[in-house]
Amino acid sequence: MPKISSIFLVKVFLFFGLWLQSAHSQADVPRLLIADSLFSQRSYKEAMEIYEANFQEGVYSTSMLLKMAFIAEGIGNREDATLYLSKYYDLSPNPQTISKIKTLTGQAELIGYEVSDGMRIFLLLVEFKEIIVGALTLFLILSLILLWSKGKKITEAKFYWPSFLLIGIIFLANNFLDGPTTALVTSSPSLIRTKPSAGGEMIELVEPGHRVTITSSKDIWYEIEWKDRVAYIKKDEVTRL
Image 1 (cartoon, helix red, strand yellow):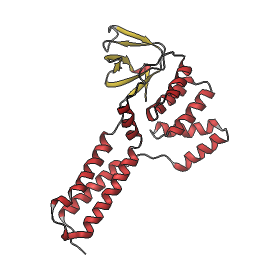
Image 2 (cartoon, rainbow, N blue to C red):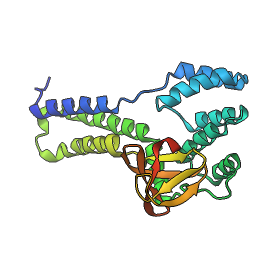
Image 3 (cartoon, helix red, strand yellow):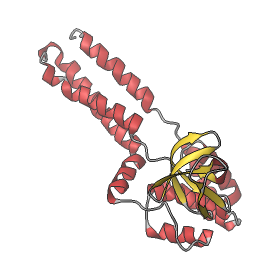
Image 4 (cartoon, rainbow, N blue to C red):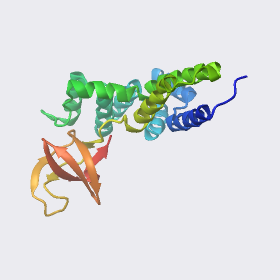
């Protein structure tokens, strides 16, 4: 058996470190299957309890969000239905979702849902982040196995660069491939101000349904982007997505 080189050991330790970083709290698949079965049987209350538990853990899919919105609207909870649809829009931007949110909120126009083509691609990458990281990790494993099998036959640094490149990409994707922090206006009415204080000049008085991009947090205020300018809104007037 080939002798284990020091560079190989370093790569193995790096690999396991990245693998641990990639570990994401996964949904209990059997429970989600039960929830889907309950939903199909119209046992919406029981299904919603399971969906909400996963949603609070940050584990959800587009189909789950649509089902949650359907249930919430059915029981008259339009605020939660709007929240779930707004989160769904992050993963799958489309005009039909905007129309539904307008219906739920009674708004003729909604601010904060504009998505450029570049952002759509980025959000798609964010949605499939785990799959991307998993595929890259698999390629890394294969490259490590290849290097191990060659042993001393490979001494030139150029043969190790693909593996190190994969390690770098996995690290960047796992730590920096995240969408913008957004929030849904849920308080009626909500004041958007020029400064993070009660004395700040009012920019606009808005109703629920609009979305804002959070850039920072200060005490009871969020600094947000509102119509291409810096503004502030109280934290208790929005719900983070």
